[in-house]
Length: 111
Length: 115
Image 1 (cartoon, rainbow over the protein chains, first blue to last red):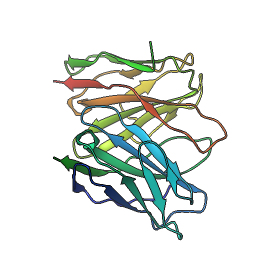
Image 2: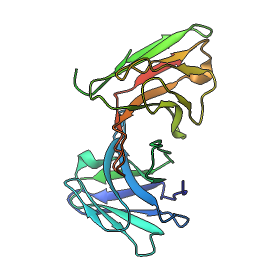
Image 3: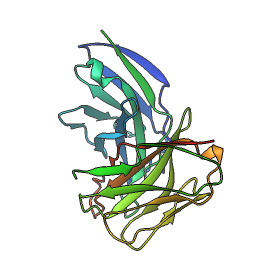
């Protein structure tokens, strides 16, 4: 699976959009981009995933560049409850469903 | 039960003792996983099971064993605990199929301290 690079931390103002970057320059054509987050002391939680088209759900939007070498997770109106570690994961969709978590980005939403 | 339960919630264990962490799910998901999480190292996969009756090794399997006798239960055993196994352990499940959508659901975790 392709390696991902994320900034170790970022701050965001409450009510503003939070844009979380992820670099995956070695991504292959059949690899998907997944985002999870982990709120303090809880298990990780799935947010969104995509292949090449932009995706949106009730939690966030995922913007994938045309060359697929990077993506951005957008939390449209960050709240204090969005403070968490956010993980960008790239993997092939196959019968092997294991996930490889990196260090992620620690996002702190400030009032 | 709803979702994934793990037991115990936390445990302090003497080195050399045997310990089994329990994970039970009621979602009928076929794939299950055990991760450990240590400060500064993120989540690392210990063992996994794609379906009942099968298991596989993850990134850090040494010192741990698992079994998958049925769909719902996936216990993790430390045969002889060592202090380096002090960690938070998360169990996870996935409804594995032919789709790309393989959301993993995580349990609440077990905090284990080995002295």
